Image (cartoon, rainbow, N blue to C red; front, side):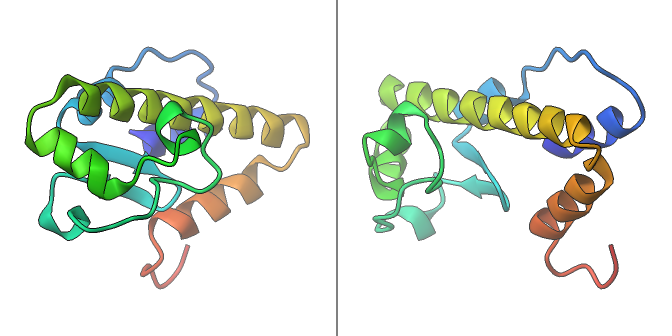
Length: 126
């Protein structure tokens, strides 16, 4: 999970091997800065937004909507899983680049705090 990467990096781990982004993509789950989106759920059937505004993946750059991805995934079209996989891998690569930069800037504790606030906005204290 992205949270695991952030916490383990804080503990000194610096090498990872992870199937999470590809496996979750096949199940219709998109990784985004606020957590996850279960794109196969009905709430996304008419959602014209892209997955994530700042994302550089094929789906987001091509402005493929959440509704279109929902349709592709619900119909078991392989393109849906491929686009979701590319998005999730792009998300994880972006996350690791941001973690690396925060370490270089000596601001990793601030990065962790922001990450936790973004992923757990309802938490009373972080």
